[in-house]
Length: 72
Image (tube, rainbow, N blue to C red; front, side, top):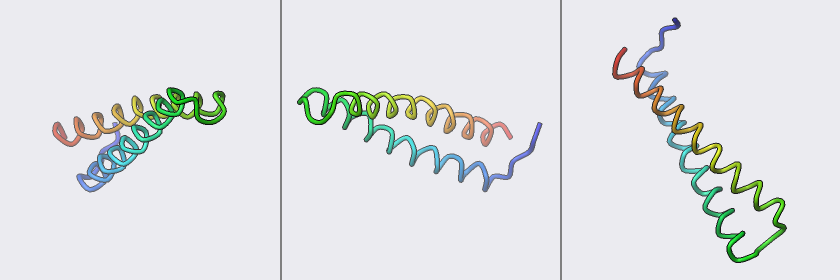
């Protein structure tokens, strides 16, 4: 199993938090645009779904980095 330095894991947590915020912004924007029928529905649906997918991945990324940092 590869070993990571504390600095690398801290960077991974920070990047995960940034992507988490960006994905929340994308998901909420897409949901709001669909609610108010603003823009082309195909693109707005893609924006919303991409935002929620990135949210799941960034939560996983951040939690794994935190787990590794606490146990390592």
